[in-house]
Image (cartoon, rainbow, N blue to C red):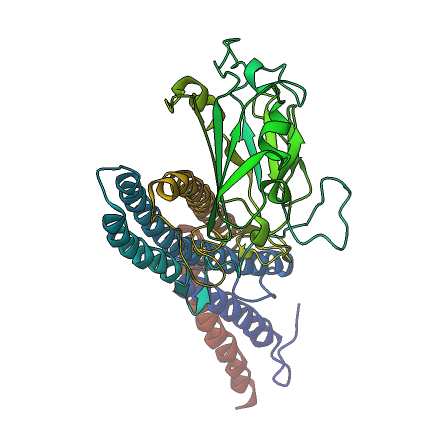
Length: 458
C-alpha cells in the first residue's frame, strides 16, 4: 500500500499525462474535422503525405495540360478560319476563270475578270498572314521538316533544295510505259483513247506564275517523246521549255519521295503514269498541267482528254526547311506532346503568283483554260491543310476528354488517401473531448487527495 506523500503526487502526475495525451488527440481530431483531411502534415502519415502531394502535383499538371489543349484548339481554329477563307476565294476564282475560258467573253472582258483575280490572290496572302498571340500560322514559318530528295540520287544530297512536284495519272492501262505510243494509249478498262496520227496535243503548264503552251502534231511517237522530250513542239506561249521543266518519273505504283524522305505509292498499289518537275522546291513547282487532244478538224477528243487531263498532284513541291512544327504539350511528362505542321498557304506556294508579284494570267481563252487546273491544284493543297488542322482539332478534343477523366481519377485516388471520414473523425473527436473533460475532472480529484495529508498535521 502506497504511503501518504506530499512531494510527489504520482496520481496527479499520471492523470496529467493522460490529460495531455487526450488534449493532443483532441487537437488532431479537431484539425481533421475542421480541414476535412485525414493527413494535414507529414507527421500524420509520412508515406501517405508524400503520395498525396505527388497526386496533387499530378492534378495541377493535368489541369494545365487541359488548358494547353484548349488553347491549342483555339489557335488551330484561327488557322482553320484563314484556310477556309482561302478555299472560299479559290472556289470563287474557279467560277471566274471558267467564265474567262468561255469565248462569249472578249479579251477585254477577261481583263476585267483579271482585275478581280488579282485582288483575290492578294487576299490569299493576307489570309496566310493571320496570327495567334503574335505568331504567324500558315505563312510557312511553322512547316514540318522537309527533306530535299533528288529522285535520281536518293538518299538525300546536301545540294537538294526541296521536294519535287509529282503529277500522277491513274487513268491509263496498267501496261502503259514509256514505250507506249500515243495512238496506242488505252484507259484502265482497256479502251483505246482514239488518238490518231495527225491529231494535235496541246500541253499547257504554269510555273512561277507564267503560263506555257506547246502544241505537238502526233505521229507514231511514244507517250514520253510526244509530250516531254521538247522536240517537234510549237511554243505558243511562255518562255520555259517543257523538257527543261517536266520529266518522266515512273510508270509503276511507285510515285516518288515525299517531304519526309519516304517512298510514296499509289493508293491501290496499281501502276500509274507519273511525271515530275525537273527542278525542286517551290521555284520549280508545276502549278498545273493541262493536256488537250484535237483532231485534224479542230474537234476536241473528249474521251482522250478525260484521261490525259487527269494528272493530279501526288507530291507537293516544298523548299527544304527545318522542323518548325508547332508543339502542343498535352502530357505531364517531357515529350508528351502533339506536333502539327502548318504548310505555306501564300499565293506563291499555291502556284497563283510569281515571285515578281504577277498573278495567274487569264487574259486569253487558252490562258484561262490552263488556269483551271492550277486552281484545282491550289484547292487540293488548301483542303489537305484543312484536313490536317481538322484531324488535330479532333484529336485535341479527345485528348482534353482523356485529361479530364485522368484528373478526375487522380483526384479520387488522392481523396482516398488524404480525405477524412467525417463520421469516424466526429466520433473520435467526441470521444477525445469526453476523455479530456474526464481527465481534467480526475486531475482535480488527484490534486484534492494530497490535501488529506493536512489532517495528519493538525
